[in-house]
Length: 200
Image 1 (cartoon, rainbow, N blue to C red):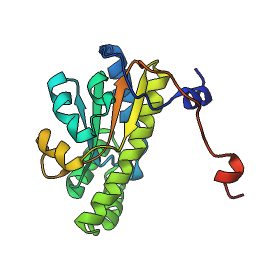
Image 2 (image 1 turned 90 degrees about the vertical axis):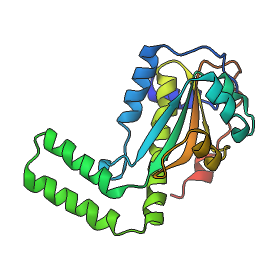
Image 3 (image 1 turned 90 degrees about the horizontal axis):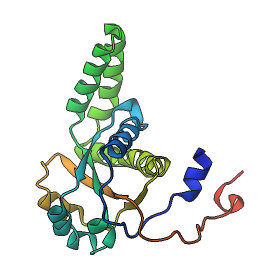
Image 4 (image 1 turned 60 degrees about the vertical axis):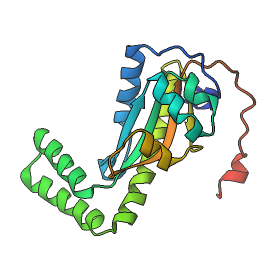
């Protein structure tokens, strides 16, 4: 399927058939998400993958009881990671493992620190939250490219999710997405026209 068809055929699935995706499909999806774009390439987030029916049932009330939560195969919770220095050190480690010259590692690490570690914790976390949406875009289009369906969601309580999932203090739920085989049908895809959307 060409990318333009993926974008047109993807829709926010409201109900799934309850069946589990294959390991191969999940592995492929995770790889597509892993290669998402992010500022500095830093990927300042972690993604919690939930398949347990009991956990999904606990999360349902914190998701306004939307049926996607309990009927999906996989529920992914995209969480901003507010630890700037730890993430930068991790990236420097990957650069070293990739065989990059020490001076390049030092220069790039210094550039990241000069920007990111000088921000307040709140400002850095807000920046990290925006990065989650880049990964979310890869996730939902990637799912359709692999032959299954998804629903990106903001209709949930981040505080309740954090409590139920017992997340550490440095992780902040930002958005969620559900994945599986659709048990509903796509309605008309309504989008603004080019003239209404672009200023040329």
